[in-house]
Length: 225
Image (cartoon, rainbow, N blue to C red; front, top):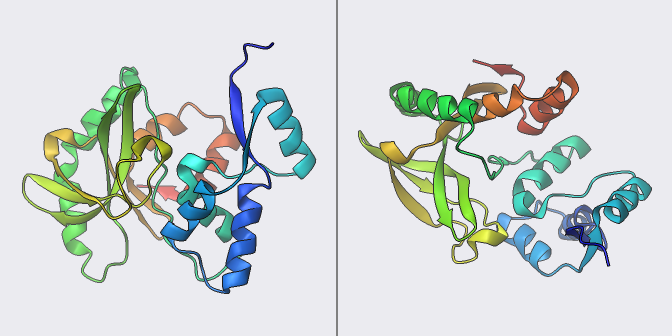
């Protein structure tokens, strides 16, 4: 028997289930509906070679279940489905010991005053400010993006807009008070213009031009300020 790690594969594809559900509803799925479909879908564990072969036969990659809401909105955007909904940002596991990431953390901290100015200028709610902070888990640290709902001189209140499998004790809409010292990164995507996103920039710098273009498309970013 192979010692290769098995990967979860949705049968049918998760994206197909979501498309079918939204077509039946005739209106966009809510975050809770998307997560419910994910949690009740059939999953088969496969070796990577078999999972890759299935993806090739389908002609597309399925949605990452840990970033279900985000990637579903990206798929809807590519399919031209309206209305276009805010996807938030991807939830990521990051090696905080990486030198470039350490510099990104420092840059995010130093630029928090600028972040606050942008938030205070957002009187017409034209964009959704996001912060990234650390959740300590048994198997390591997970860095999670939260939507900012309040800000103060010393910290922020952030809202969880997606619940990955690792955060089963939490629910969409749960809020957390995050002090400045616990901010790993901040980000604002205003009409394709990226403010902040220092950890994203550090990761992007490790990619080739084709991968960078794909990331930019997924993020809905046309320029980095």
